[in-house]
Amino acid sequence: MNQYPLWKNLLILGTLLAGLVLALPNLFSQDPSIEISAARKATMTAAGSDEIRAALENAKVPFKRIDTLEGGKLLVRFNASGDQLRGAEVIENTLSDRYRGALTISADLPGIVRALGLKPMNLGLDLRGGIYVLIDVDMESAVDQSLERYVEDIRTQLRDAKVRYLTVGREQGKVVLKFADAAARDAGQKVIAKEFRDLVMASVDDGEAFLITLALTPAQQKEIQDFALQQNITTLRNRVNALGVAEPNIARQGDRRIVVQLPGAQDPGRLKEILGATATLEYRLVDTEGSATDAEAGRVPVGSRLYHDREGRPVLLKRRVIVTGDQITDAASGFDAQSGTPMVSVNLDGPGGRRMRDVTTENVGKPMAVVFIENRTTTQQVDGKPVKRTEKVEEVISVANIREPFGKRFQTTGLDSSEEAHNLALLLRAGALAAPIQIVEERTVGPSLGQDNIDQGMLSVAIGFLAVVVFMAYYYSWFGVVADVVLLLNLVLIVAVMGLLGATLTMPGIAGMVLTIGMAVDANVLIFERMREEIRNGNSPQASIAAGYDKALSSIIDANVTTLIAAVVLFSFGTGPIKGFAVTLTVGLIASMFTAITCSRAMINWYWGGRRLKSLPV
Image (cartoon, rainbow, N blue to C red; front, side, top):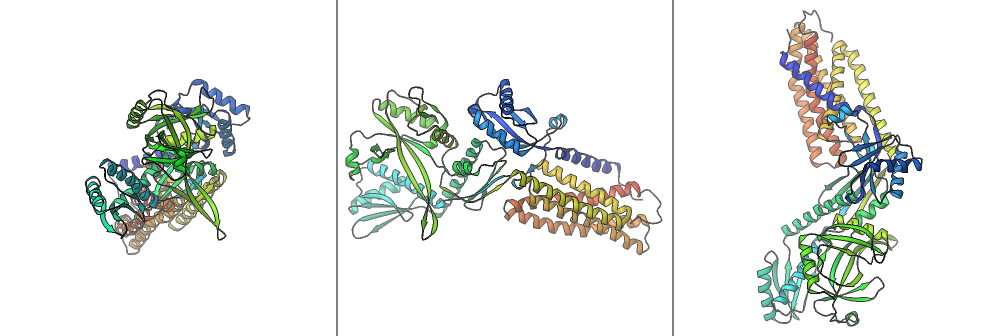
């Protein structure tokens, strides 16, 4: 007789029940929604829900209901994606000073399901709609920026050591120092060898000057590039979060590219503007001893640098920076109480606050300037082809006397508009990009197209499933029906595990499901054909059942393991869509091994295993 022990039956039953419970949230509708939070870290009050409800009703935007979420947020549910977009526009136009909205899709789950903490599978960009952006990071600029910092540091060290030099600059990926004589070069070499041991130093004589070249090692360049890429990912994630997009996916691709996927977002123009922006600020003292007019004529004092304001007037500033944008921890836009002009309220980190306090204490009554820095990309026609060029623009936006010492909190004025102040505050909060970026690919998937993809994907799964069900029931009789039941359980377990892992379902993932259906039933085909062979060899029905499972097991394991290896390789070396296919295929293979071998045998053992059979219904 073929019988499983009680503990094994209970274990199988418990696993299937757990899978059914975990897959349950996917049965409920997914509502287009807006997740609303209070602006500027304020607290959402009870009146907020009434205010948002009134704004939507006044604009005649139909909505399903407003739910209260954890963390002081609200969720406005809509019946259609068109109503969702109209609702987001109403909130942006009328309530943006108090509330921020993020487009999302939320499952309408019953209270008991939410209490258990269960969530449905995440839907990918191709199913939900949204924006896909592929970004290339300028790694060469990251290395150049690092060398530029070395240039400034070397100048400072040479001046402090009173070593005379002609020039210090960058040439062909190296720092080049020129000296008037060998003695000065040797003195400079000692200073550099002591302070900059990580650089590769070489001495060169070109006949006119005595040179020292400094270069980064390949390992240092790789470290700088990796840091720039990771820093850009962090900055872009901060910027996207500030835009108010729920569940963004920002990941590294290869050695120099970043993939940004924003489900639910539908404004690519605004997205590109914020992602590619590089605006930041520098605070410098004004050189009151030198002449800006002489500097414009080419006579720039040592330790100073010539800038221009937005009207084109020359301004001579100290070369040493007080604080930079990367020392800003928080920023908020608003209007100056006295002048009524746009301003940005700035908070500095600890070192930046102490530096600002020390400098303003020592320079009360002296002018300090704010330099606005931005990389602007323009497209020009060269030989009839569009060529993008990035230009670094540095403008003095404000010069004011230091009335009294201040530290980590202060205001910056001189901005052209409230929109510029708002964007600058957003960028300062998110941090500066470590290297320039360029958007090389952009795709927008509309909500209706995403829904079409879901419908077509589910239809393909249903057609594939029904075709297999009909074939198995017709060809293998009641044992075929058993195979159909475990095939359904296999789909349930796939959905359950995907939801439990927090995996994202995409169109390639749906293709993996369809492939898994065929592969899952293949194991039962091998088992049933082996049973038929045992019956033809004259074995008893019960012996044929046992032999069918035992002797087909090695073939099933071989077939699934080889496919699993291919899935692991796809996941290791593939990009986003291929990874989604590999994840679904891997989960499906593991689930099919469990259902096709263990669950089907448990069902056959339960109904036929304890009987005296003359034949098998196979």
